[in-house]
Length: 311
Length: 258
Image (spheres, rainbow over the protein chains, first blue to last red):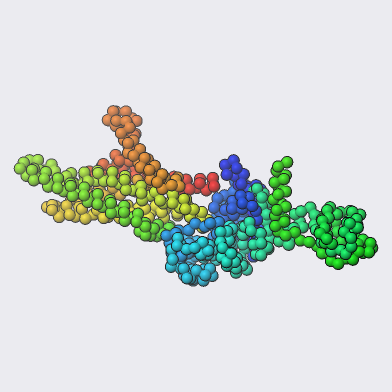
């Protein structure tokens, strides 16, 4: 549905985004993660056609953002971070206006308007000026303007930033209810948001993609290792002895009788490990693969990058 | 077309939900009305004196006595009241950030520019429309109404006003700050005005003639005298077209630079 091809963006001499490529399939929700200033907003603005990339191209539904920007823009609903809307307009009037300039046919405009107002729970404030609304409601109006022409793609730039916990919950519910057929790209630096709502993750740091995978796989695929967790009954000093006999083990941490074992990525040592533990007469109480949480992955990637740059 | 109409409607509504249109129109009509009143009084005094000497009376009429000076002074009033109409069109959208969403909608730059420009042109048109009672009033005292030169004067005022406005629109697209936009508009308009004085047009030098022809004011004089010359219409139309075209280019380059 969306294909980003080798996109680079320079602001004058400053490199904002460097050679980014990824794809999002129809109906997928993609989490776009990265620390502040990593290039998330720049990438999203390129996808929406706000400005063109310095290099590369973006395709939405086969249309190039460089050659057919109007076709691309028709298919995208965009909610910028801190969306600015016309404060002097009433909510209903504003969404109708946006629907009209987004090319919703006159005959369908009223229907779409009412549907959007109810979807975003805006009926109560429909006749209020946008400038008078609280941030939570303004965020809904921003979602409303994105949805009014029923676009197949939604681009949401930090949709929950600056909201209180209740509003965050409501906006997340709203985003979930909007998914289904729609393809959504959602940027954030709040990690639980990604594990809660997204199918796929792209992590970006300093203008470059550092990892992309499904939410489940990402922990394994990006670090050079995967982790196993074992609970073993026995004297820790003796137990640790075993691990040093098995090639492929990079590191072992233990807290009492729970052991976290880092293993080289492509080596499967589970059978051997289990056999050794039992042969030595220890009690193997629990044995499971351990997922890196998104926080760990994220921190690991971002700090590794910094380490590389420092050296 | 629909997009232009939608942008136009929004801008017109903005002019009339905020005080801008009312303030500009009231101040303009008040000044215009006062000048008209002064010219009427002066003209009636002069014509009263000329009645003593009928030989001179044929040399003066309502156009020379009232409307030519009124339209001439109006060029200065326009210079003062038109930049405040154009200053917000783009500067405000850039400052408040609303331009970000506008640029992501499936709408062409030219539709945005034309919608906004037409809305501002409408305000100039309405301003002039509000002064129309003046000639009716003046002609009600005259034996015969001479509408030709008055209409020509109005056409000149409209073309000049829209030219002022279009320059202001361009500057609004260049600036993010409305105050800066309005002050640069004043400066640029005065610059185009003074172009006519830069070199004495009667000095015989070609450059003097060129500068004289480029001046935004010299071309309105024929209209005020009641003379509609295609040369003058062409000047204003070309000036307006250039400004609108440059506005489009500015928006485009802003995008490419991000």
